[in-house]
Structures are given as structure tokens and as C-alpha cells.
Amino acid sequence: MKRQCDNADDIIRLMAEIDRLNETVFSLNGQIEVLQYEKGQAVQQALASATGEITQLRATIAFQRDEQERMSYEKDKHFQEIIASGNNENLQLKTMVQELRDEMERKAMEAERKMEAERSVHRGELKQLQETIQALRDKL
Image 1 (tube, rainbow, N blue to C red):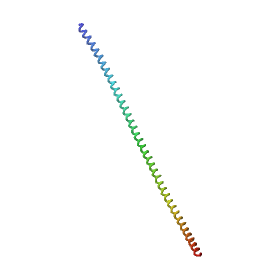
Image 2 (image 1 turned 90 degrees about the vertical axis):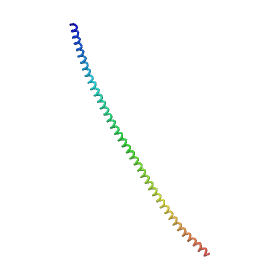
Image 3 (image 1 turned 45 degrees about the vertical axis):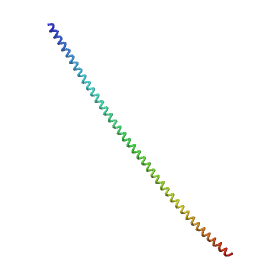
């Protein structure tokens, strides 16, 4: 009978140990679920953070591209203005040079006319003097 009692005590002890083991398994399963949930939450937070960072980086890249395009446009516009200004100044200088040439030609022609008129007057005076000299010679 002692053996049966021992067996019964062993069975009770084993059943108690099985209960404790079941409780441990249940507890560990609960802890595993909590850890899996926390792990899932951490992954979701990391994904959200990475997604937010990617979105922010894309926005920064888009802003920098727009800024680069704006600066390139402004630089091109500035160069075009410089070129246009240079072309305008060049045209003004060409016009001024042509006006100065025209004025110089007019003054040269006017000076030539004056010199021709003076030559004509001098030729007339010379002719008159020569005629006077000839007339005086003829009288002598």
C-alpha cells in the first residue's frame, strides 16, 4: 500500500509539476506574445520613422532642385542681361563712331570747299596781279 501511496504521491507531485510547467509555458507564451508585440511595435515605429525621414529627404531634394533651377535661371537671365547690355553698348558705340565719321567727312568737305574758294580767290587775285603787271610792262 505504501507503494500505491508513493505512486499516488508521485502522481500528485507529477501533476503538480505538470501544472507548474503548464503555468510556466503559459507565462512564457504570454511573455513571447508581449515580446512579439513589442518587436512589431518597434518595427512599425522604425518603419514610420524611416518613412518620415525618406519623405523629408525627398522634400529636401525637391527643394534643392527647385533652388538650383531658380539660381540657374537667374544666372542665365543675368548673363543675358549682360550680353544685351553689351550688345546695346556696342550698337551705341558703332552709332557714335559712324556719327563721328560722318561729322569728320562733313568737316573735311567743308574745309575742302573753303580751301577751293580761297584758291579761287587767290587765283583771281593772282590773275589780276599778273594782268596788272603785264599792263604795267606794256606801258613801259
